[in-house]
Image (cartoon, rainbow, N blue to C red; front, side):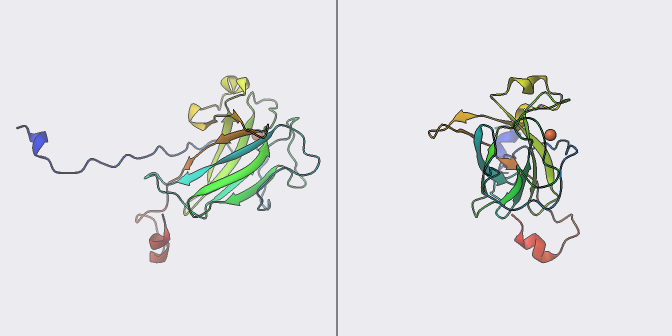
Length: 186
Ligand SMILES: [Fe+2]
């Protein structure tokens, strides 16, 4: 019998890798509305239904997390007056979100079509961006990371669909927050 055979300690739970943060870029603005779709009358482009979950590093779903998207239109331009293609949703009790959007264009100096997003639970906001598996330009983009790629598939309704799960750390006992905050966290 070796020393390792005698240990009764349970193996450490598998931790999920936190979603990497990325640049915010110059176009984020406060005040975007809560909505289930970023598409309005007149919005051009290929429709994409993006969905997924927000999880903590232990894999537990985080309800009531804010998932705030902003993106360029199909010509690579951002709306800096209103909130075209900008809005947030909130995860349900199972940590799920859905947002209807388009596949954005890319624009100089970027090489990739990308979806900007901020995700916030009982935590600081995570700012990052998502890339699309059907966009070859992503491979030439200096910010591309495989961990941030959404696998794009054709949906039955002729639109595109993709899923992406965000993993964000929540506040811990080390943080200076109230007991109620710690008791309420996922
Ligand atoms: Fe951008």
